[in-house]
Length: 199
Length: 187
Image (cartoon, rainbow over all chains, first blue to last red; front, side, top):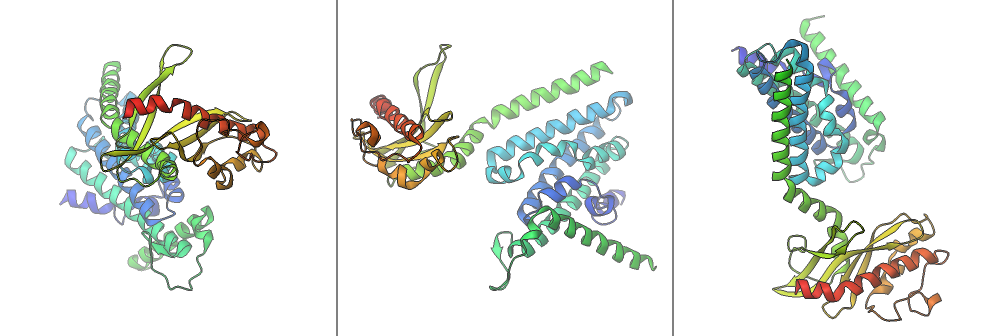
């Protein structure tokens, strides 16, 4: 029961970019298309789950004085593995995501989950937490990327879905579009949850 | 404290060096595939193999330090018959090296060239990438005709960019000079 709870909290209640407003750098930068958001999200999920597992296993061995350094080494190792694998098997995606793959190291969600959750809990809840947060992040990036792609380019995952006379709004693919879109989603989510609370 | 950190760092280094080794070949392949294949395709006549997969590395000499210089040769095949070779060649232009992908048929005639990297002046020397200039090299052989018109050859250089044009000619010339060796080693 608890494991399920740890998993689902990342999907709505604490969905990283929209609720915790963490990891905004990749959220804003790479979501120019649904596919990019999905790729970035999955890469981050992999790192998050792996680092959560390892850190939760090592939580009793790592002295608290050097815990941040140890966490960063663990996280950075997984990020390099992801980077090399992407380069080897998904080169076009690697080219698009570029510098944001190595920058997963400094994504606050990952260090945040390591520090706040994995270092205090056993392996199973840590996996659930990592998966939940990772999927939450992936969903957020994919949704944001898809919205920007539909309005900015008239396509979804590369296929044209808008009517033929649709004039794409170029601004949605540029940084202002990312802020606009993120702000509107944040507002919408706040609206929905305040209605749920009955205010 | 020190021990734990050392062990973690050591283990991380070990895992990463292994991953690096394991992904080295596919990474190299992908890099060539996406960066060089467009140029290779452009300079060769029709073929039905994967020149990147069939690439052969040959030693072309030694640099100043005595280390061997290697070059990737991309053979184009139809069935099992080699119908062309593509390889890069570089020469000095006006600003640094011009890297040219040269396609050569088995008789030693150029089938096409494509400029891969250069840092020539935009608007002047940079015009060497235009098909108007590069297509003149089609059919060129190692002869006095492979020269700019200013030097009595048949290649019409880009106006205002003598050095850049001559750099490309020089790169193609170097490629053709290497051709007998390429043919011998690749077969």
